[in-house]
Image (tube, rainbow, N blue to C red; front, side, top):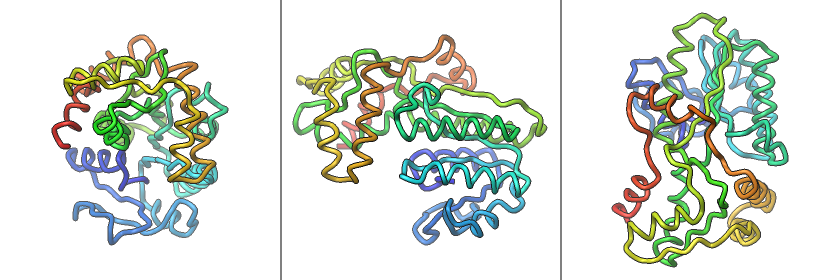
Length: 284
């Protein structure tokens, strides 16, 4: 699921590179723009008949639920139908500290789905990514044209993760689950970046790369919510504010060994924020 989004496309590409047989569920097959070898199932996560059909004959499910008002219903329905269809292996895209930031709706949803995976005895890998480095594409113009880094990420620090790393780890875990017994225990993997950065750190990186001062806009999530509410539903903007408040109060700081574990899994260094920012500048 989620195969046409930023993470899902990475997962599909990595699975095909590993010669996996892939089926994706999409609401819009004509505009999915997926490789010809990918089997496409038409429907969405709240279309019960489509879900039953799409999961028929599937061994291993990659479950990604978009941040929507009915995200929890989507997760509950997906896991129930998967179990009824005989799917026992799941790789689930959750979020970093899902069990702690339960006042943030899409964190609480993912914690609920994680509990379902445990209670329904799935053989599952739970992936918990931090803030996506790729989100910075959405604020590129503010940085480049106005000299401001606007995301209120605070001074605790966030180890931002690149979706290329998420996609590759997800594909590796899907293959491992697919090829292993259904009794493999549930495992949780924190998906983090190589460096834990504050708002001031990030502004400094942009300043260095651009050769001019970029100013961090500060920790107040109020202006952030106001900007978002101009282009999205107010409840979504408010939810993003709650998430930003968590960045400021807690950060997203890797546990000991998280970076080293991912580096061993991938057999290479993790993508860094500085390198991604350089790619944005080069493409501008």
